[in-house]
Image (cartoon, rainbow, N blue to C red):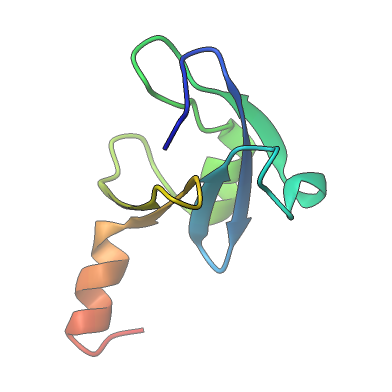
Length: 88
């Protein structure tokens, strides 16, 4: 991804999918929030985003990445399973 601990990342949420990108490469920086990649390569999701998305503590997320674009996305595993089983 080319990211480093301490780096600012742009975080946006759309249709229940969280998107992380470098603000330099992001076209959506203005409509998101800035988060920081910590020394353990983690991002703390702001409380308001978790509440708005319905994500409780301990939720399992599937993370997908496009390294060449410097973009990662996360979606709840339950949503992926539901899609495969024909749910909404």
